Length: 141
Image 1: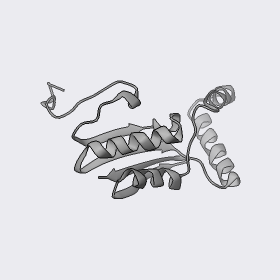
Image 2: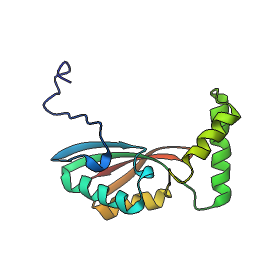
Image 3: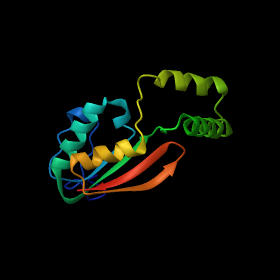
Image 4: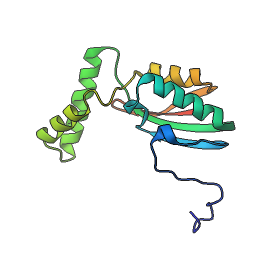
């Protein structure tokens, strides 16, 4: 960061997200993290992030989501697994990963994620990218 001249204004932190001390934050990148926390912890974390933000601060959030309709969810799952196969993953690797995430990764619907962001206090929430069941939002304080 020093070599880039941004050491005074950028802080990189590798830590449990629940232990990060947010302070006068203008940008938080939160990628595929909330889905591993229980819903109450997600809500509390988003409130802490919002409370730390300077006016106009931005949260960039990416999460795996689930469909309300099981049929739609199955279509998305099949398409995503097909994508993985096309990129060199074997059926056993795909199945192993799916099994390893059961009960650990608990996705919400896009609408539930957006509701958590608004409940935390963010004034504007915009979906900026979506592929299969993965969505990225910008939430503005």
